[in-house]
Image (tube, rainbow, N blue to C red; front, top):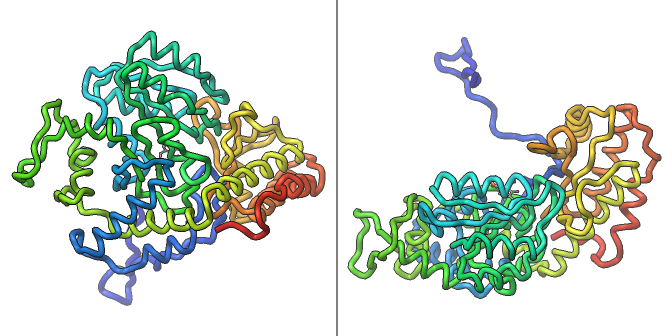
Length: 428
Ligand SMILES: Cc1ncc(COP(=O)(O)O)c(C=O)c1O
């Protein structure tokens, strides 16, 4: 039941709830994480009209800023307004028409999400599966492509549900050889692990802000290759109320969503500025600042910082006597799955972390629900002191819950594992 507005007898109208004043939690789950203060400041800047030259100038800057973030020279690099899932849905509904054959690389919840969205589009879906905690080999992918002959291959880069990162080198070449387009969900890795859209030769990649980019959720950066843009523009059907003489419809089947129609969204982000939605101004400011922060830090330094944080976190939990989930070789650097020890109530631990230490760690989904915690160190939170504070708090909570952890071992191991490759205090 939603709360009722409290009624003050002294006033003839209801009193209103308090001003927003959330507790200062340290968000060390699989995302969202705390946003960088510069991003929050950017979001409080004044609004602009959507065709104001300052605004369209910012849109062009966003396009330029996200090309290096995606590792691409793709002209079509822009934002879909909505959470990361909006980017996924926009990519898939714009690439895939009912009946199209799509191969999904499935190794966790977000591979299943791709199939779920594709099912609604009416695609003919085939999956190539790895157990949760593992990834697929290039040979498995090649065999599945050869057998199924897909029009599109859809993959997740880092699946936060399992904490595994699928290697994507070679995927594009397989797709090229088969005449297929490719899609990658990089929500959980963008800004934290290398994205190499051009080197991987993949066609559409989408992301989000609320993980390694250090922003809030609500904007989905996307990049689209020329090849994919041609395929999408071939399905352009401009809505009747905004038809213009200088924009022709394509010959392909109409894209089955108006909001997520990337042909119209790209026309809006082009010099034509064809009106579609009203660009979410404050989210655009956020996305722009996220990319500026990331590029100013330098992407290699940023990836090294995430790797150091992940290394320290897994060394720390292991030193506490806990087991890390999944195949070590393919672990995402920014989120660590930790097996909940026998006899320990995982939800009680999470609650004590939150109530006693103001720290959030993640639970899990599907077959891993109740079996692992997911502890992240992403974006603004991939910092040495935040990893150490989390480990110290976890040790205290586990002791209080009756688990005999070696005293101080988690923090010591994390400090040792952090290594020398990141300048002290870095954490831009
Ligand atoms: C790999 C991956 N894809 C997609 C999503 C969905 O993102 P959003 O909740 O922003 O729509 C998430 C969120 O956790 C994710 O980790």
